[in-house]
Length: 300
Image (tube, rainbow, N blue to C red; front, side, top):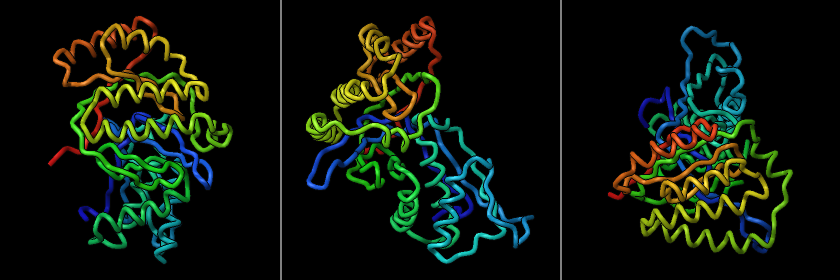
């Protein structure tokens, strides 16, 4: 493993699809990640200049989940945490649906593994990082460089995809904050939706395997609309109108966050003009928009 003193993890723009199925043991929650190029978190370990007896610390000091991850995994590995400072450098907004805390936890856990086992293969490092991450929160599977399907509550990988969708998401933040686990505890599952979500899972899996970005975007829209009774998006109606006006492929949201956006693709010949005009229209409606590039694992 390269550079044992620093590890990085990307952020996301909500999810392409998030839902649950109903099995013999109850509801099984899943999601398809929407990783993006622009957002990332790096965890670095500093020991120089720190007394060997000093307690483990983190900066910024509010990144307590990162601190807990390093402390818990160090205990599992029977390693001392004294004389260490974890430095988190991240441009991922917190509690919005960009997977900020998951990125913090995984980057820090990988850092701990790198220090303990500098030559550890990636599968081993990922397994150890996930062993602590799933004890701390519900989260996305952010260890894969592209789109992945995972069991949300255990961060267990279900499928990975190599794609060439070339999506650009024109996103807005509706403001406020959503805490993922609190959100899920407060809202019960709907058995009637479980069958719909199961069908959408199969359809999105097939679309991604086929490289059908238009079908995948339509499913993202269905997921956003299905979820709107649980966490309404004030911008959804405006986004529907702009989708039709500017030929966006679909709508993508953070299902337990404050984000919503329109999906375009660089496969569209006039992609840049569509994105520019869409952002101008959002501005005229009073929204502040940002653009995000889907992070993809490419075909060999």
